Length: 230
Image 1: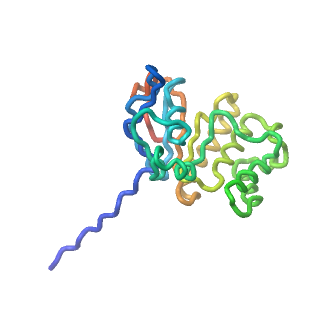
Image 2: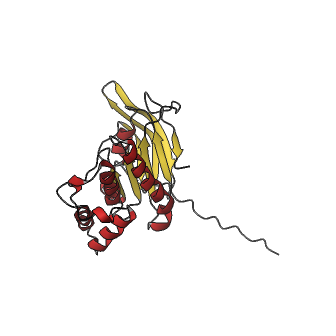
Image 3: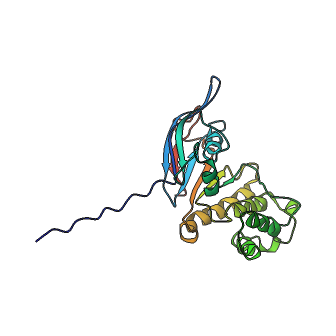
């Protein structure tokens, strides 16, 4: 009698892989020996105080900045060697909303969908407005939106095309407490449903200030890497 042979399934590569990442400006070391992996379909937070190098790390991962040393891959593509493929795999929401204030919320979403060459842009815009509780404001110019509404619209725009990796760089910067709660509620709901609603499952990476974290390899700040949300 022969025993059954166990079939080993290949372990999927992480959505983001960072090894020995460094960035210096002359003698000023912004990043020094940063290492972390982000699993596919997960929500991941990079925490640290202002000036810690969080945004620098994301600028490198999104191909906007060259590292001084180290290696990084996003969705399996080398940040340094395959920047075009990396950009096709990501969406980046910066510290300030990137909506066009002249256009309505609906028009902003349609614009991004058409830039991504997606069909049925109007239907997609309607679905995202509903998902982010902006249906009633969809016909108004973005200039008339509150800070929280603009942020929700900005996040909705970043989801168009179901990018495999989504970066959120301190998405509540400059918002009042009520607007911050609105945005975090929208992001929490998306983080909980993204693995089921996105194809392929999206990986979320967000940056945040953290006064209580412990020191790590991001220079001059509290910067542990941790899963989010709990």
